[in-house]
Structure formats: structure tokens, C-alpha cells
Length: 333
Image (cartoon, rainbow, N blue to C red; front, side):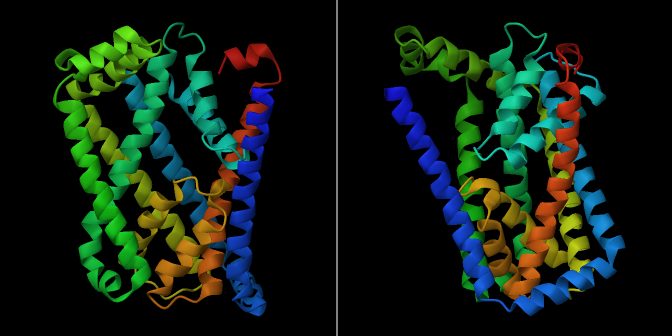
């Protein structure tokens, strides 16, 4: 009975998040002239080379992300062929885009990566967590480094100012957290953590996960390479956003894209609504509105960015269906 009520509660929370996201999007659209959407759509369709450029840049961003995960796996002694990494990564993208629950793609990534790696599930799960953490931290640091180049946007407008403060606060907290976690092995130096390990059922699992995480301390070159790949991925995604902006003929400087879009991508990664529905569009309106981009254009650019990701997610869906057509194909992933 408990399991059934828990499942119902979970479904209710999910549908509530969907309702909130759709409500936010409907609210934003209701405050915009529909005619502006139509004209913007026609303009973008006539400038289709920019749309293709955006889709291509999105692919390169995903490719850099997949390569980062491949490097993170190496630290745990797990090596996969690049083709296999790409397959698993794009299947994960498909489930992240189309499964309404959060982290569905990460679960699938862990599932496929663990095949043939008996007894390494905890370590593989930690590679995905580490991959996410490196990408998140690198993008936040990238944002904070670029904010001073357009500081007037953040000082003069409430929306960007709040987002900028959030970025700075998160960067400080992340650095403090890394110092605590990486400075010394917590289980070896603090009795409290050994007590957890020895007196709880999940203590040994927590220690194993932490040991897998702590292992990265001894691979600084790989960490820096992963940071570089994260910045490269953010760069390609930002160029994709710029390409979609060009399709709409927006008068936005390249530096403004690099200052504003990474902030949006960081906040979007917090699963407030499924697929950041409504939240993403609100962020585009708020931040790009500070540089005088109209609401309709900002929402259209947001939807194009999302569509670029969905396109490659559908490619991952095709790979998944092909791989799942037989157990032999699944094992050959």
C-alpha cells in the first residue's frame, strides 16, 4: 500500500511540474503578440542555413560532452571505444529529452555502461555524477569569468543581476566543497565517517562511492582536460544559440551571447519543470530582454535551442530502438 501511495504521489508531483511549466509558457506567450511569432518563424525559415548551423553546433557541443565522459571513465579503469560512448551518450540524451522524470538518461547511461562491467556499478554511477559535476562547475566558472565584460547588464537590470549573484554564490560554494572533499580522504581522517561506514547498511556503499570520487584527486591533468572539454561544449552550445539568433536576424553581439546563454544553461539544468519547460523561455525573456530583445524573439530563440537538442535526442532514440531490437544488439552496445 505504501508503494502504491508513493507512486501516486510521484505522479502527482510530475504532473504538477508539467502544469507549472505549461502555465509559465502560456503566461509568457499571452503577453506577446502572436503575429510576432509568425513573422519570426517565417524569417527563420527563410534563413535556414543559420538553422542548420545551430543544429550542427549543438552536435559538436554534445560530442565534446561525450568525450568528457569518456575521459572521466578512464580514471576508473573503464575504457570504451568512441563509437560505443557516442551511442550510449546519445541514448541518454533521448531519455533526458523525452522521459518526463528527471535524470532518466543518466540512469540509462549507467545501465548500458555497466554491461560487461560486473561489480563496477557504483564506480560507473560515480563517473556520471562526476561528469555532471565537472560540466556544471566549468560552466559556472565560465559565466563568472565573462560577467565583468558586460557588468553594466547585471548592474542595471534586476533579472540578470539576480542570475549573476546566483552564479557567483554557486562558484564560491563549489570551490569550498571541492576543497573539503579533495583535501583529504574523509573516511580515513574522520571517525564520524568511519562510524557511518561500520554502523549503517549503506555505509560501505557510501564509502565505495566516495573512494571512486576521491580517486580523481590523483589525476589533475585529466580533470583539467575535462574542464577544457566542458568549456568547449559550452562554446559550441553558445554558438548554436548565436546561430538561431542570426536566423531571427537579432542584433546581439557575440560577447552578449557568451555572457548570457551559459547562465541560462546552468539554471536550466535545475529540474524545476520537465525539460525546463517555461523556465527556459522565461530566462531567455529576462536576460536577453536586458539587451532589448523582444519577448517573441527571445521565446522563439529559446524554442529553437530546445529543438536543436531534441533533434539529436531523436537520433539517440533511433539508436536506442535499433539497439533494443534484440538482446544481441543491446550487448554489442
